[in-house]
Length: 142
Image (cartoon, rainbow, N blue to C red):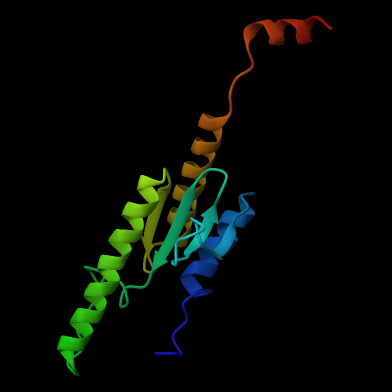
């Protein structure tokens, strides 16, 4: 299991490339919360968006996960713990005001990237405070 990548997978790289090309900047494999022991694949700290690209096998994709015939009890428990940990991570981040976006590795990177861009831009726009009307008119007069 040590040979399995936990970052820089092909689906993750494809998503990062598209999001970066759209002009968004992010942290890679970073902890969204300082005391959290888990990392997100992409982290947009100012807008509090955490993006995870979950592997179908390791996270129990309902469409693609097939329980191995060798030692099925072990693998069922292991994948079950991974899924439980994912839900705990989501709950912690949501409680802290973060938006959690999870994608499966089999989902199209362009669709995932557009969803990420849409959410990050939306959160940026909602956090920008418009200028008061008095300041705007004084600036226009000058």
